[in-house]
Length: 127
Length: 123
Image (cartoon, rainbow over all chains, first blue to last red; front, top):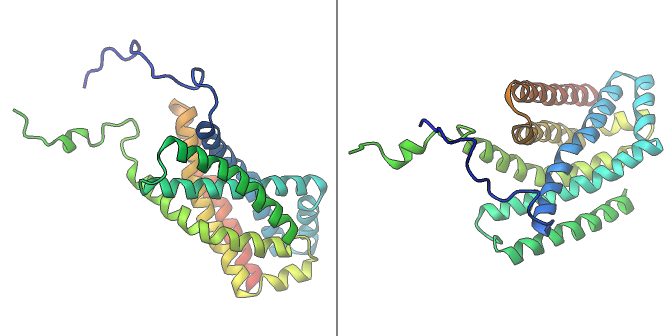
């Protein structure tokens, strides 16, 4: 219980020691994309609230989302959403004990990057 | 001689005190969003940019409205769990507690506003 030697113990190698790898970079990107999606999420909430409020409020919110800046945010968010979704899928697979080997994890990371780009292009074409 | 089991001695001593429930909720919401997100992207994306009257008529249909409501509810709950993990990793002390409470309240408020708005449009 009484841990008197807390500040003095060796730390395991961390971010500044390791060079970037497929596994580490694709993992941190899952975190970044997931949390960055709050921007698009709040924009969409604003859009729904404005639509429920009336035509004038809707025109404002819709104008912001469909402006060039809004479209840029939405495009980035579509990629972030697909990437994060694939990242979540990878976690669900990992949780079953599968694909935990280094080579398979790296392959899954590369697949996430490629598939998220393909899904983004597909979404933009369809919509 | 200790009569306490290994598990009993280990329970609750991690820095987070518990974590399996958080992880389980993440798994459940992840699976739900795996289904909801494609539906939401292609229903919401299909009507985004349309004029006001078309948007209102679109979200008066049950399928797009229910998909949007469920996506907002599950999505913001998933965000609330995820952002908590983010804060726990990088923020410490009182600021950590304040940030977690603030983001949880923001998540629930956003979900509440979204659900109210969609129901108001749909009805």
